[in-house]
Length: 331
Ligand SMILES: [Zn+2]
Ligand SMILES: [Zn+2]
Image 1 (tube, rainbow, N blue to C red):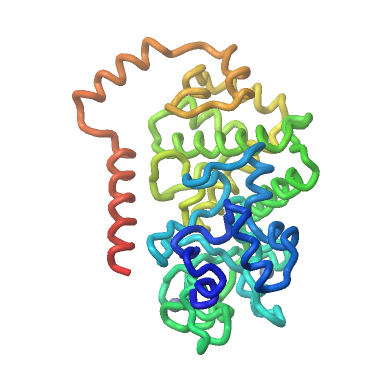
Image 2: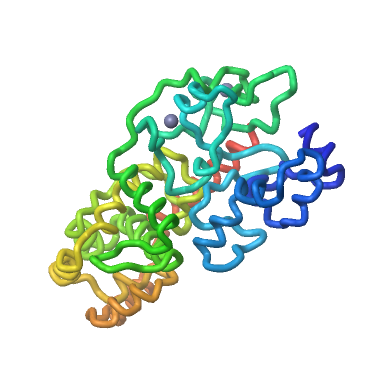
């Protein structure tokens, strides 16, 4: 914080997501101070990747889809910075990798370990901007001063790592594989994101045909992932995201034949595939057009809901929101 205040006396960079660097004009000061070229610094920010995924400039204020959100409140974080202890251990000068901010990254490609996003001793999120010069190393926990490199490691779920490599390839190649053909970057990530949302809807356990459809495409529904509005991959902790992405991988790699069979056998409706209050990508809208409609059934159900008690998933969501607020208040 001392360093950044010297570079930008009037900008409190750590009250925002410092890696996003939305305003490229701000590079000027740090380029002058460090002698690093603007293009080099630009490639160390999340903005170029976000532009690729969005297909345009991402929103200035909102959470960026597919990027882990630090949930910044003043200079405190809710979570957000992931790391591989073994990578940090083998670094001559430890540093936090840019891909550790990608929400599709839950493992380390080099070591095969699951990434961590909290201190193994005190469970605080990584907040290196709160370190003092006396702490010397960036791998020290800002809250309890333990060394993050000493954390025990475990293997990442294989399917989560496979999805991660697949998504990395999509960005590298400019196209993503889907059902034997290809899609450009933006629709590929939109579709993956949509499928995660469907998995989240099915987790509520209220839509039998949807659960059956997912099962037939190879998805094993993960249990006990905190309920949030939407899929909110970006604010989930790494281990929860890892299980969701492991569940997603079979869907993204299923063949067209398997997919069409699953649609047919599960009796999923148009609304079951393209409803749930979600914005459906073009591919979903086209595919769902040929499915039977369940509109009449849906309208009776929603009136019943207005009069009856709130569904379990809504209560769980409210509880999760409250828990997050309490956690922040205590820190
Ligand atoms: Zn590693
Ligand atoms: Zn700690």
